[in-house]
Image (cartoon, rainbow, N blue to C red; front, side, top):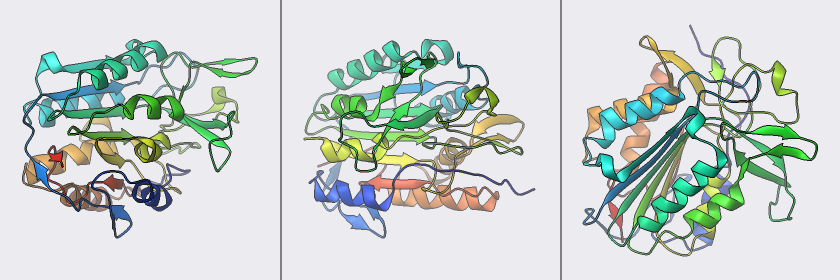
Length: 308
């Protein structure tokens, strides 16, 4: 049965253009994606991971099903094969993933990253758009990650993590380090009765929403504001789509994460990010999900490598 999906995700081609225009190291346009024009090398330092998966939200009606499985799948079937060690991996699941803990964990991961290190950041959970308050967003909207303790208040939503905050933290990645950011989400969503999607429309009463997933524009814009480091971004879908919180082979998973890991297991470590993206898109389409994952950054670099 075809999986119909609705709503939106993050900016794609325009954001990729911003990456190039702002001089992100090693970035160039490749068929609507960005690709490395510079060299690459094996990781000589530490491989570090910061993983966030949230099914359990304190806000009524917002729970998801596949986000925790996403993180377990990534750990068991991809990061272990890449040599990521438990001591260098931080995992926040469900009610551990508060605003305070996410920001503290991400700051710690970036601060610990040195030249020659690789940082992997995976987010599976809700997010949304809210009105911009400082005038730095051309579309008048700030994108947010939604931690488990997101709550409504008299002046809007409390405990949201703004894209500006993510940009400030991730922009501290040092020169000579590289980072992969995977977000299985979209930036707003409406209800799909056949499958859940990831994103919250905060303009509506979320009590009446089925669970939906999010991605934030921070996934594409933080790199444009970063001063150093090499960034690759993989997100769940295009602007007019949503990322499925789907039932696959007997368990709930994010469609992006499931087929990203599956393509990794089949393709191996010799793939470039462009190869990996292409294989993942093909698998998602073959299984009749109407979402197309987005790739930005060092597309021509080998996966999990340092882009010089």
